Image 1: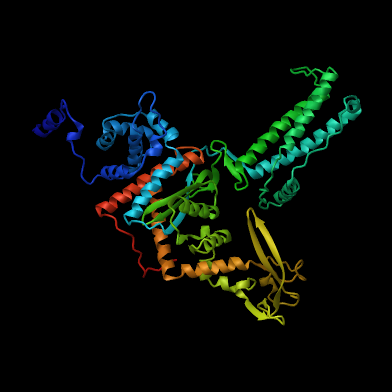
Image 2 (image 1 turned 120 degrees about the horizontal axis):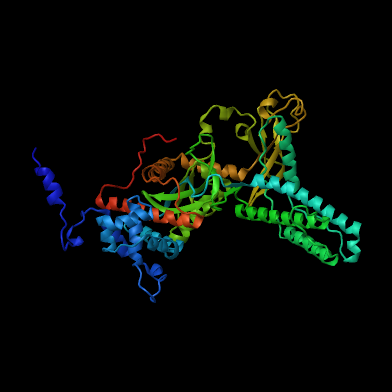
Length: 589
């Protein structure tokens, strides 16, 4: 057998070269590392450098550390240990590091202490301005979408608002009994007169009555094997509640000292009644403070959180490892895209997309200073608050309506009880004022009777209420009235509430999305934003964050997005990627 190739490879090809200089080996001319260096030379790192002191031992160059982490993200590498290894083995990383070999502590120190969110944003938007200057983006149109990515939190560490409400209800009942025992102790032993103590009144927590109503209803529904009603009433425990319990403890301590009552512990020791009440008050105080802290962690916008990452909310994910619709701790990650580049990102603890649109647009105005002309998003962003915000700021809305798909079905137009399937009549009265009323399927009039308002957090909705004065004998009554019950609703008349401002906003948005530009915009959004999430999850394997807390997760996304945008920019420079042009002839859903 001829061993020529064998010996040539192992004995000659892999001999050590003495006095070898790394820079004698040239990197490929089209390598993305050159694009990274080109961009870094145009960025201003003054804010990052200002985080370092001139005193003491000189550390690693912060620009070099930033370059290494960004290049790692360009290569789809997120592990710090892997970056450390590549700085010793990979020629591109060695070229960026100029032969230096920073260890994992240096990277964590840079990422956690030096590269703040503000600095990361500043560098990102400097690059965005470079893209605008080179004509790759205009910053006048945004295509927005979101996805849920699992948080770095334990899956079974959930805290639910409904569960806390249930246990709080039982706790309040126990505290009520405790107050009765305390007052009875005062009167029975004459401590009220002797120590100048008054009977204590139980504190009140607003909203507990409604919580208890739901608990009672759920007990009945459990017997009939019906689905439970959610018990997510927002309860706020004021500072008065724990203070009142502290006052109770102080009174009991005063009595114990005055009566020389010793607290005992251990087996065979009988506790006096005063000690039993004291210990129970202490236990209840600790529990109520625990629930108070949990409510504060959730705020008014969430109904759950994880103990190991308090800012992560339990959400229903597409990846279900148990195939039972299990909820996982996650963050709602939003991106705003133009011409393949991610212009903005926003990390939210909200399970829905309704409340994420306005922060993204406000960030756009704040960070770029460019007037946004239009925005395109899916039906998850369609709400009266969002559409009104866009209208007031002169931004064209290309947001798909929630009933967009339903409008394509016959059933939508067969629902005779809906106002959009009734005749709307507008007629001037004797005073010259326009009066609006509706004609139902049975040719009966529904006239305006009153205005109603409904406040949802910081937003006020106005409804016009229309009523038919007499629905008796109507053969369409069972189809017209919602959840019609012949026994209960025989004398009931049709009443409908219409938010006309909301209907007008939807009509304009629908007109926009059905226009030629609207069709193009929806095509661009579905291809570019969904394409990004496909790459992020499938190709780059980002299905779970490495860091905990919204602040650190946002920073992790900023590192990743900078690397992703640089890859797109590199492809534009190499001519392998061109500006996206939608196909106008293609049918859009």
